[in-house]
Amino acid sequence: MKRIITLTVQDRSGVLNRVTGLLQRRQFNIESISVGPTETEGISKMTLVVEIEDEQRLEQVTKQLNKQIDVLKVSDITDKAIVVRELALIKVASSSHLRSEINGIIDPFRASIIDVSKESLAVQITGRPEKIDALIELLRPYGIKEIARTGLTAFLRGYQPQVNELATYSLIK
Image (cartoon, rainbow, N blue to C red; front, top):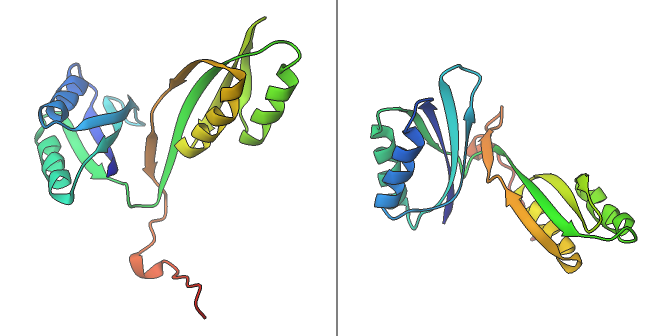
């Protein structure tokens, strides 16, 4: 099962290497990782998407990450109310007569054209990974030359509903 794990870490040399090394030694596959500064100087936030087989292994990796000297906080936010985004740049083969057609495809996705040349155009899209995957599939017939994706970045929403606050729905009346 894929898990989204966030780490608040000291912004120091070697932290990323130690975190990824720990996961590699424990044979966890990191699907994506994004790192950047936070609102506090000297503190960075990492967002990892990791394939973890079961709850016991999840607990093990969380404890191991918490033991790292520069790691301040570790959170598995997969099952919480979160905001998740990813950025993708997609270079598509395009001639002048196909540009308006491609623009019509990307417009509902709120994507934008960020570069145009004689034989291609570059599209920028942000959103949930499923949205990006859907646009990529629609652009595939035009000939995708290159894709660059950032990986997920995420944080908790301002309001976290309690389990008993979640509405239950039934198809049976």
